Length: 471
Image 1 (tube, rainbow, N blue to C red):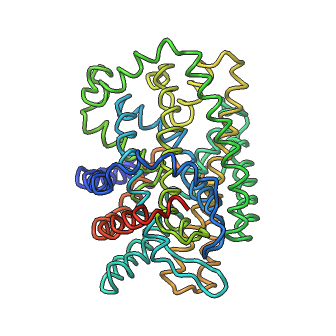
Image 2 (image 1 turned 60 degrees about the horizontal axis):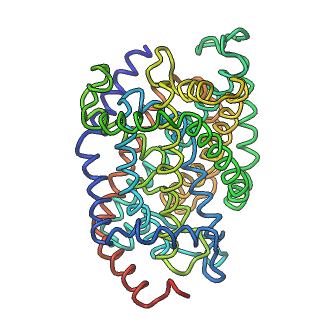
Image 3 (image 1 turned 120 degrees about the vertical axis):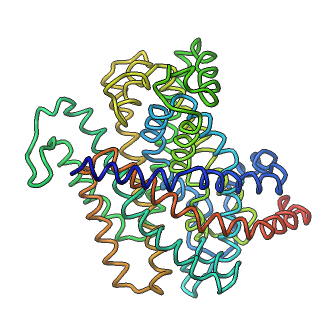
């Protein structure tokens, strides 16, 4: 039965993530990059400066840094550790190249999303903010396009419940915990209708579900508070260990870089024909890159809309740093680690096992120590992603239902239940489901970005022409 389901999901995924969608997302990023004059390169230093410098005035619920951490909490997750591994294994080292290409243009996309989110957001009298693609579609494109906004919101709910928010993150956590505490599945329990699972998986799912429930009850401010603590701390730890791995294997870097570039355009030359064509490398790299940094999906602007910012351009620049940190920094480090150590070529490894192999064989420290560090990073990265995506999907549901509290509360408990059952989904099915909903969510958002690109350009030119960036 699982085989039939997997085959069906793969066929749907191949259709959704076909060449048209890849062209749509890349074309949007290229269009914005061109019209904004390579803003992601010229204004990156300013964006990084403003990342830590909050505005003193402005509507919203949380600071710009808290909004960024909330957005990063939803992006820095299994996509950085497991997603990169699956992309390189399925598409060869060249997938990393296309992941970075998508991220470069994705920075311009993420900038536009953050700008539009603040420009068209709605702030209630109690300070409650609601914004994102559903509002910049409805208010920016006109009320006649409200149906498109509702489609986006619907897919946003599905992505949270069945895609990035739950199954893939929890599956990554449980796999990492099992690989560390019970790699041989020596201590298992039979679960009716599901099969035999390690006690490590069962216990971790219970603890995770409880922690998620306790935090989600506190709403956005509690999620933002947790994210501001965990995200920077774990990102620094992962960055340091990855840099150490690369430095200890620095002699292999030139060959690894050549392998990545050559594999991007001629995968067979690198993989010996094991991986298919250049299209496969592009598809896996772009899909996993977007899964990781979410540029083009329209999720991050939902958090950006809650920022205490009065300048849409400023918040757009801060939002842009999310893609830079997530993919160009963290995913690159993961990908290089996997290529340098040859982990992607080891047969029998899947998902987090690939990255674990890279850390265990690339660092001159006991294998158990490196595996433990990776497990902790993955657990906390994925945990914050679960929290961030609950916020996103609840905001989408709030838009769909007009803020019906009982419906949102019911959804919250369904979300927690999805977290609980996540470990019992197969790895392949989990990532395929996530890919499908990612693609469907991106379509209405990218349409809006094309239509509103002129608004983004006008706002940007006005902001810098008036010298507001010097204030």
